[in-house]
Amino acid sequence: MNVSLKLILILLLLGGNLFAQKVERPNIVVILTDDHAVSAIGAYGAKYGATPNLDRLAKEGALFNRAFVVNSICGPSRAVLLTGKYSHTNGMRDNRDTFDASQDVFPARLKQSGFQTAWIGKWHLVSYPQGFDFWNILPGQGQYYNPDMISMKGDTSRVKGYATDVITDMTIDWLDKRDESKPFFVVVGEKAPHRTWMPDTADLGKFDHIKFPLPKNFYDRYDNRIAAGMQDMSIEKTMKLGYDLKMKSDPDRLADSFLRRMTPEQRKKWNTYYDKVEADFLKQKLSGNALTEWKYQRYMKDYLSTTLSLDRNIGKILSYLDKNNLTKNTIVVYTSDQGFYMGEHGWFDKRFMYEESMRTPLIIRYPGIIKPGTVSNQIVSNVDFAPTLLEAAGVPVPKEIQGKSMMAHLRNNKISVRKSAYYHFYEFPGEHSVLKHFGIRTSRYKLIRFYDHKDFWELYDLQKDPSEMNNLYGQKKYQAIAADLKEQLRQLCIENKDEEALKALARNF
Image: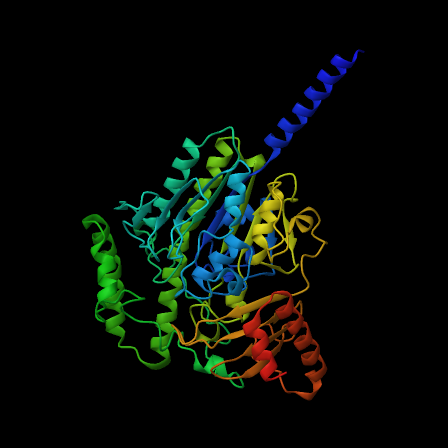
């Protein structure tokens, strides 16, 4: 064989390999919801049938039992996902900050490497997205009914329909119009099931036949837990009859503005349902614990009814991938920006480092890499999403990223990603009066340092006390464990370059 022929064959082989690599680059769909509690998802043990499509996704992929967020609040959680960096590094510490979208975000690196990129739906980072080929976002928190949407031109227009349907339809429209020669990355940013839990009219009353059991610690007295006693997120005192639970006998201007957005047809269905609920409520003349428990039942019914449309639309996206022969080469990630309290400790909302809010749902389907039906008990964090998806796409992970790639774990779930999760919450004073705190969560223990307004520690043995009712800090039996966890926490603060946390540790270490 002469030299020229050899050279041609080598070039053909190299070209074939490069083409194969290009074809094998996976598409990526990230479905990011808002305030979706693990306890409301069937795959995690919920009994109410609200998530059949999510349950399907879990059967076809991996369910993560120990996925945590680094800061349990909406905007900062999204910033962590985008950057792979902790809040103190990416600059978005709480919802009052403005995210610098011009910084190094991983979708921009995907775009540079040849992906088509899009973010559609809830963004909630004050600034406009950058590093995307396409975006169309809700302003701020957005609205459930007939939502306004901001286009890449900066124009705002009102779209008729229910937000979850609108966002899905826009996503599918973008997928239909994409350049099919390129892999795609899209974030489907859902508003649901964020407060005030407004179901689609088709789902009103779907859970009215259920009487939800009260969580065992619903009437928590917060013994030996200073911050828990100071919060303002209780169903009893904080949840509003008008704003949250749609009772017109407790007038609320903001709640009324939500109704004014509705079409006559939407409002008629809405009023027909809630007027009946209110008539029954007024007839009962409830007070004390009976009123608090009625509020809990209404909260659960509205919240789960809101998730029905969410799950239905996840099903639409999965069906689209199936019908267009995209399933085998598409990573689907389902997660929420944090967890949520469904009556545990008598609460709704999030923010605390306690399990219900720090823990987030995470389901990943990756055909050919993840064995269907996989259950992971390894600790992972939302700061790990960016490096994981970059590695999956074959894009180098910049050294500035603070998260750790999960790819080795996705291939072999016995391989751990990290031994512990780090957490830091900054918003005080702020809504719901949750004190500033940071801490470490290991496979068994959780150590929390509350600081700034009040300085104290909390320690929990999650094996013996999964509901975090018994603060063990200061008990002689746990002194050695506390000391070891403090040192691990200090090392994490150094590793993550969290100067504010290090200063707080120096005041009482």
